[in-house]
Length: 152
Image 1 (cartoon, rainbow, N blue to C red):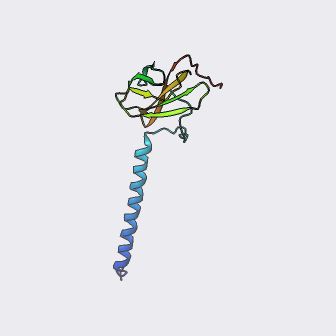
Image 2 (image 1 turned 90 degrees about the horizontal axis):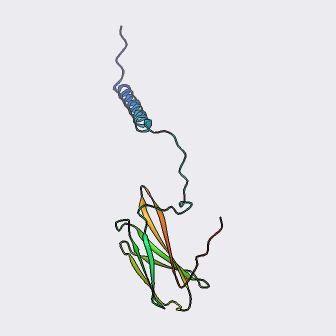
Image 3 (image 1 turned 180 degrees about the vertical axis):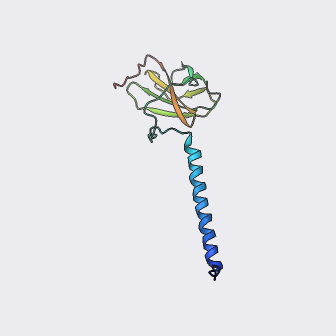
């Protein structure tokens, strides 16, 4: 006599098990297809870029017009208005000051300066590049300020 048919509950469990196995196989195939064209490489290092890098879209023509207690700064924005700017300045014996400049602006007026002192100005441009950013710098001065150089 043939064995009795399996109860419906066992068939349902077997069907669910087969479906789960099929989903696992499909997930493994998807991972292989997605990762298949990639070559292993070094892991990205978290944190900021170790040193500023000049960029083709960095500012050019950075210059200062001296008006005594006011200095007007001018530059060419080669980023088509996408770079964010900041200006760092100081006199030879004074504290460092920083001014943020809106995107697309190519001039800034620095006021309340001592007309008897020289001032150094550094323009920084933060430029989007790929999935990150790079920073390009330009320097100028008035009244003979000589920028201090840092030793490596």
